[in-house]
Amino acid sequence: MRQERHDLITDAATRPKRRGLWRDLFRSKDGAAAIEFALLAIPYFVVIFAILETFIAFTGEQLVSNAVDTMARKLRTGNITYNLSRPATDMDRSKFRQAFCNEVSILIQCSADEVATPNKLWLDVRSFTSFSAIPTTVPRTGNSTYGELNTATFGFSPGGPKTINMLRAYYKWDTVTDLIRPYITNVRPADGSRPNYFLIVETATFQNEDYP
Image 1 (cartoon, rainbow, N blue to C red):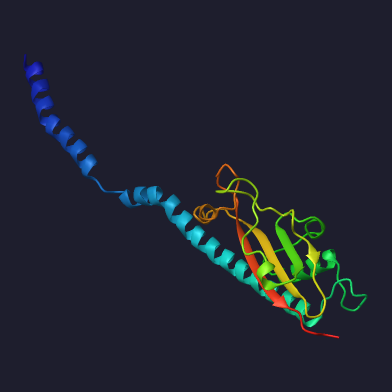
Image 2 (image 1 turned 90 degrees about the vertical axis):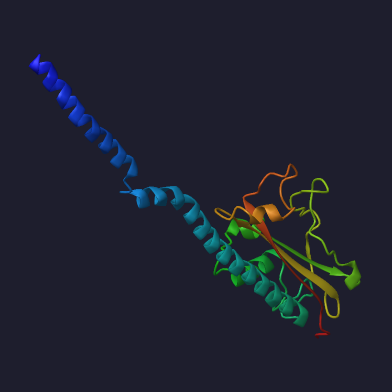
């Protein structure tokens, strides 16, 4: 009888303590910062890397833009010519692509295969009878909403002195953490799915000087 009474007293004495332990456990904030960081780390680093990637992509756009301006100036002044029987300045399509790649080599590397057969970098150099005849939109395949870049009309046929010309460069910049940029363009698969790149487009239109 005394043993049973002792057990009841012991249980009654320890029950509040056990409840107190559970209450303290739920109220404890030890490790809360680590848990919060674990929950927020992934979106935090995605945002950070997206900012860095956007900065690098912007630098790439500026690099392509500067290359277009440089190569257009050389065409306009006769430092680069095409099919004029001038060995010192004449360039064919491959030589021109290699020269353009040299201008962007700080961030964009062109392999020998890329120079010979475009996969990411596309150049369209053509001569027109007037400025109004120069295309003003990005050529696309597919439906009216979405479509891939249409390269069927691209060529390399700059004119000679006093001709009107266009140099347009397209570069498919790969994206990793920048999830928004590929969606703000209609140059993507016809089904509207997210591409793994965004398209850099830079254009220069000019009339060649009357160089000798």
